[in-house]
Length: 170
Image (cartoon, rainbow, N blue to C red):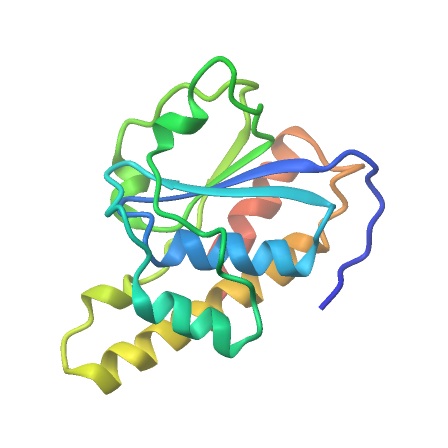
């Protein structure tokens, strides 16, 4: 699952979702596993649930990804002056993308990667489980593409265009 590493300084990447209990948490865990040391990966929510959804943890563990340090937290933790400067901020739910975000230290590149909310799926346990697996697979595909971007040579609008393209990937 390792991606090529060209950049020496890790990029700070923040995944946002309203509740920070499923999609953004899974994105954090997946990118950490793909590119340990190449990115400092975080997740947060505008209205965090305060706990990680049990099915998100189950799916991550089924894929052999560590879950011990994952926690639901507010995006306020990353908007303070002493917070790490983010290089990339990605929203993974439509509601968070429509909200007024804090001003992030460092003026990061932003993009929206809408992923259906697996916790909102109706139809019982089996349907919900399938929805979590689908969200994981979609995030993983996009994050593999993300991890292969040539960050050492891409900047400005070229980087924004590539991030937006990944957000439209199935």
